[in-house]
Image (cartoon, rainbow, N blue to C red; front, side):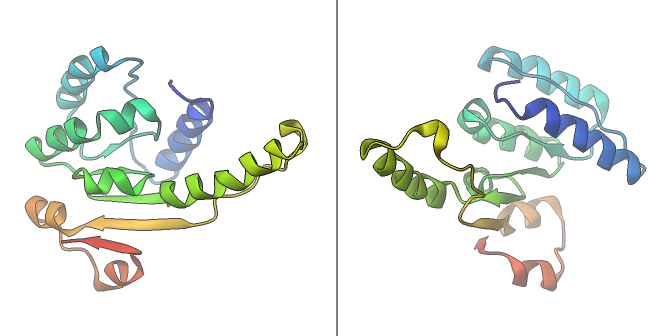
Length: 156
């Protein structure tokens, strides 16, 4: 786990999968060197989809994950739009660009004397759905028009 919320995310994902009658196989990676073993485990497990956490390591390896998913003809999803740009089928989560811009207001407050511990934790300013239509086509997935219409960005 590379980020503090990973354990909670996995726990909730397992619960959601159980409610849907799905089996979730968690494959942990701590370093870039762990990916070859993770890819082998995923392939052996017969994964029908890949869901990745969102952290710096996953972001750095997004293109490799997307290539692996494409070569095994399984969709990959995550929470940052940049992953869809790298070849994931779709992403749903906070706009990283918007979040980074918003962070500037926190920096400004701290530089003006506010204590970081006194600043409120806030939701991201924007949550976005990004769909990679090229990936959908390559996987033979016909996405409903209603889903495409809800997307904040379509990658064609």
